[in-house]
Amino acid sequence: MIPTIFSSTTLMMTVFLALSDMPPPPPAAAKPAARPQKSLQKQLRDVEERMEALRGKITVLDHALADHTIYKDEPRKAADFARLRTKLATDLDTLETEWLALHDGTADA
Image (cartoon, rainbow, N blue to C red; front, side, top):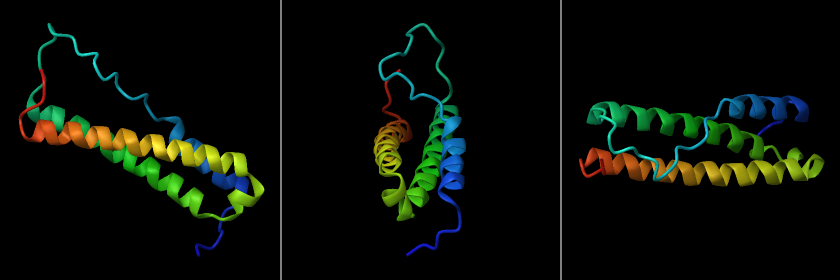
């Protein structure tokens, strides 16, 4: 059991601030054909940076969800955090697949 070191309000603000700068996920099929390709290394770095940002946000949510008081005091907030964590994990999985494709050199143009 993780000791509660933050009040519920402090915890919510921490989660909000950590997630507030989250960019929207890139569109899946929105790749202009005429645009010059970035180097493969640059693409890999970009994907790795986005993956790391998602991992950090997932960690923040995991810490918030590990605090048992959120389920009792604010069940709606806990449910929202759980849904957001699931979405972020799905986005991370998509980025990991993209990273693997780039790493193998088989990514679409």
